[in-house]
Amino acid sequence: MKKYIFVIVFLFTVSLSSYSQTAAEKEVASAVENLMKGFIDADKNILDNMTAEELNYGHSAGKVQNKTEFVDEVISGKPLDYLKIDLEGQTIKVTGKTAVVRHIFNAETSSNGTPGKLRIGNMMVWQKQKGKWKLIARQAYKLP
Image 1: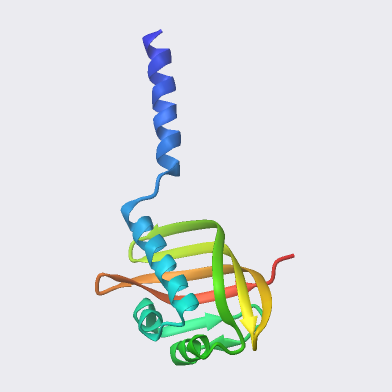
Image 2: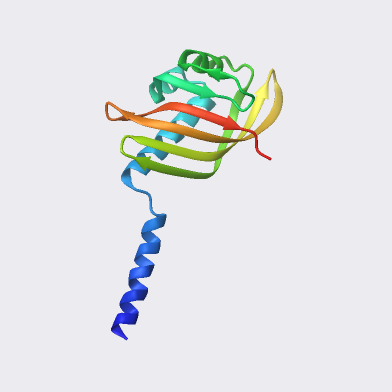
């Protein structure tokens, strides 16, 4: 009976630990959240601080931007001004100083005053540089 209880407690503990985030995953989640705040506020300082100099930012339509192009586009509000962002089903996998983040990106937008919605898949690669998580690559993709 004691073995049976031990096995149940052990399996319960293992299952709980698989759902809890590590400290590194929490740091990355916070970095993603901060980047989304930069989108909504069109805040150049946040966008600059959260992205690496070697940023490679891919859009779902195929356009790829460097850091300067990405930041300039977001702060200009053209073609889209981001009003609200919700990340659905986010997963984070950290290996050493690299993290891969996947989620569904849902946004309420405005384009020249016309409201819109955006729903795409995203894969982001983050790297810890000088103690801070920086976005080094992002590729969006159209959802079926």
